[in-house]
Length: 228
Image (cartoon, rainbow, N blue to C red; front, side, top):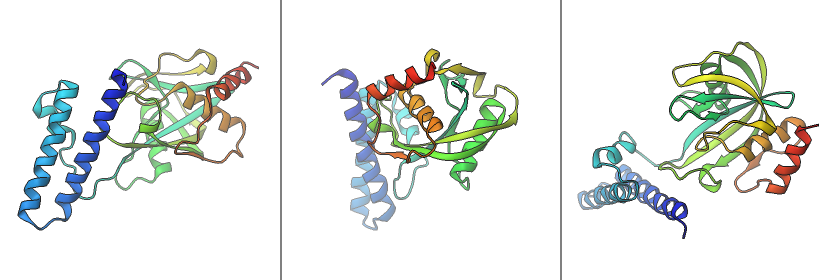
């Protein structure tokens, strides 16, 4: 198994052990079971310490405050196209570019969350017009991560505002699809932007979900269409 594949597998196991322990702690009334679930959580943290080379306090913080039945986290992304260009923001955390978006807050609706995130990160106001894709991040070639994340990707229409960086972003711009800058691949992949553009061109396409995803051949043909 390749090094990235090895890391992804261990992180997936650690996530599953942590989720089982967290859910068990939420429902058990047996003190002996509680002790066992605590040990499972500690085991998951040791796996991360070994695999990521992170100190104990850092791995403990990853799931601090996570209680109750364990569920995936939800991230939203808002794709805004202008002709054959896409709106991107540059993340201060890694200096790379992404479609604006972020975590859904408690009491947010999915569409409300994407409107807020696009405005906060780019300065533009938008109107969501389509849920184009529901993505299980672990089933796409993103870098391995600790959390299990669902990504809701919306097509949005530009309504107003002006480019304005934020506390989390330091640049905002539109880029041609055939000349994308270096992307923050933990947040967005080139093939995902290309697929969102296909939805922009063909509004009648059904929402993509799970493993229903275009091949590289489809992505290549889309790049060709964007040049015309």
